[in-house]
Length: 368
Image (cartoon, rainbow, N blue to C red; front, side):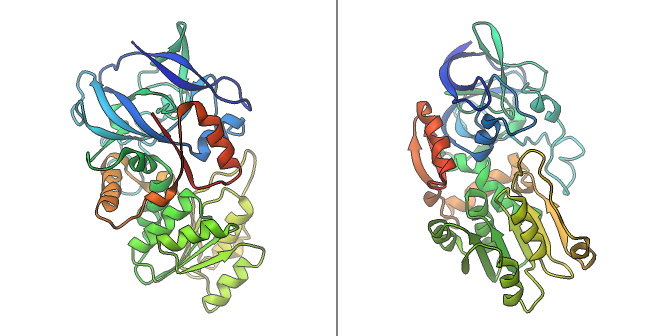
């Protein structure tokens, strides 16, 4: 049993409470990880607010983590003590029907247990005074340590700084993967990315790496658009009601080959659909809409050949492909440093939420 500090969601709509909790040792197939860094992601804030219909409390939040393996359970084969790892809310067992298919990254091994806040055997490793505390997204990385299944850890090179590697646990991989693995952007194409947060900037970078000729990024913040230019955007626009018409004007009336929505705003989602190219345009939706919201699409946009795809974790098969994305950073093909806007301590996690709410920077990273 390990005693550690963790940020616990006690009640929806209330600040997280940093306190001492207990973490049981890893069982067979599980790994104890000492967290070194963890990004503060919108999904954490979304759940803490109570807007997530699948949320639960009490729970230790956090899912964008990176750290060092401290202990392994029986039967663990692919990671060893001392390995550097990125936590995966989207695991990869490499055995289920989805892992064996190139069409999806949605591993079926532990999804039901994750949704209940449990680990694969249906129990938890977190507790407080003997009372169980549930895990968040199977990760719970707003803590000094976490216990996770081996199939939910991606081993990364030791030379990758863990504060940067943590961003690949969610936001950055989601955006890059949406362009590279879900949409499979083709060289020479025209791309429009709606939203220049962590995911949108990742989509810009992914489109550039795929060889897109023109990458238009749309956002309401000039500061964020400047970051988009740094990731390869050829055009940056302040968004508004006339964005769809402007895309059509700039593309001979046809629309963009690929559009990406990374805001979670259903009105922007509709713009992304409507600005996709007639005939074969693909709109990839990565944003998470609010509870009860729906996407209103006029059917003729689909009848005339536009397609709409959802993308969870960018279609990334985590154990295999997160290390590949991290290697792009190590090879100098991706600049990750500008994404880290604030470095905070665990006790400042609620301030991290405030910074995000005010759109102050791209990512606050907790350093342990």
